Length: 115
Length: 109
Image 1 (cartoon, helix red, strand yellow):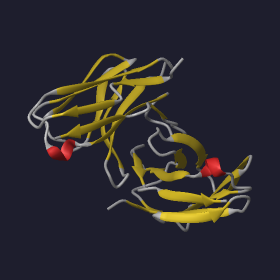
Image 2 (cartoon, chains in turn blue, cyan):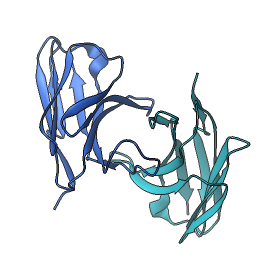
Image 3 (tube, one colour):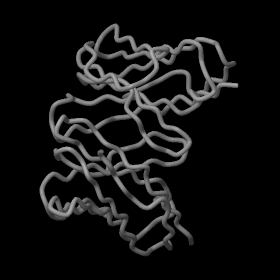
Image 4 (cartoon, one colour):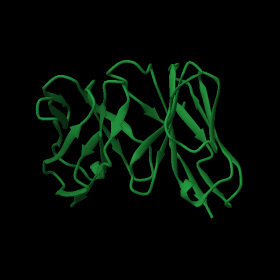
């Protein structure tokens, strides 16, 4: 059983299109995250949800909209895709968000290529 | 600003020992994490340090000095499968993770 699963694994699309990436976790965790990893391998937090409530919303364009229908799911919708959106997007989850030993479990990543 | 520094790349020989350093400057400190990331895969948790000293876990050990803003990950008896990137991350006073860019470790036979 995959703990954090995200789909699709690969996504190739044209500039200007709209796309979604889905994420589900079966760990019973309360907090879920979206990270972006660019070509330089920096992991940058985009959003974090705790029990379906948005708790972190870093400075990302409002073309990116997260949606959490329940605490086991966190989807990412991207409008009007741009070349600079090409990256690997990782979903992750953790038991909670407000403690030190907050270990993240990551999904396998979704590689987005915008042409 | 907040900053995590670690070497971009290191090379070591199979069977040897390697130490990957990480220095940090953050707004507060609530622990330091090491994650391993194989090429094309997800990061996976290796270790967590919140108090000064050495934490040993099999072939891997992690050290922390809060006064120096410094940590290292020590890998012993290197195996080819240890070729990966090693990411250092610090949890700041707001319980947000600040990530380093990772150290790519290349193991040669």
